[in-house]
Image (cartoon, rainbow, N blue to C red):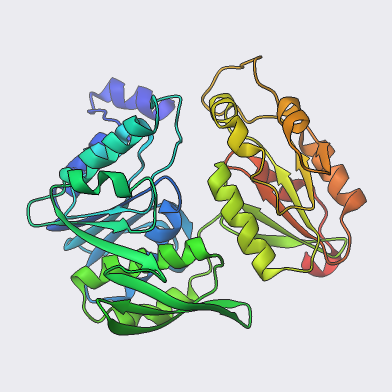
Length: 379
């Protein structure tokens, strides 16, 4: 990296990203750190668009580009900083915060963590390093979060969809292609929330965002319109165009739990359309260690077009291959499309009017939308 080489030449101190965030977050009187195995970017983005409309001078740092804030960083003031806090290699333990948010806990990053208990231990440490007088906001419905609550040494605030919690979302429904719900805090209505993003998991993400902002600004319902205008972070249910009349989207989902939630939300929105998934498995370790979990993650899809595994940071592992997934999956229609030319040709040849196509994965599968020829009216 030429920048690192030049910094070394000039004697400029170097630090890893998480260490920089410890230094940065320590400078702010208030800090929100949003963690969770799934949904961090969306929940942080939702929180960001509301904070941007509030009177709180806030600096916002998100893990993906958000059109509403013009990127993934907004330097808005020194009162509060919002961060997406990732558990990979325990990097979130370097954050300073007075509100820790735990959306959920799941078996992931098994190239670093030994097992689920090891992951839960890391989240307990993350919660307990919350500043004195701070609080931990947790998902009351997440089965892997519940066992750690007794070990958390800070005040706990809960949120849930249609179940008992401090913050609740009730009467969840779809109207005119939008998801609506009624938000409340300890029995007091906060108002109706309308979302352009879909799925029960995004209702939970929105509720976590509302609870986070409400802790610092009691006028949180004034910012519901900003939440309603939120169209999603980059690579989350992102529409790209039509091919042969089929609507083509991309989504970052890569863990089996995320994939199941994504497909459920797609079928909820498009119940009568043929759903085709172009899937790129992510990393050899995740594919191998969550092999069984992958097998039924795609049950709501009509067809799966599966690419080779995206290695990311890992060296080639001959003990796991896409073909093994294909052979083990009970799904009726799976096609091996190892690379972009194969997937592109399959899309041009087989997509039909009314189909819904999603490229799925957190590698570079989204690049397929640069290879295909979209219908003329979409160009």
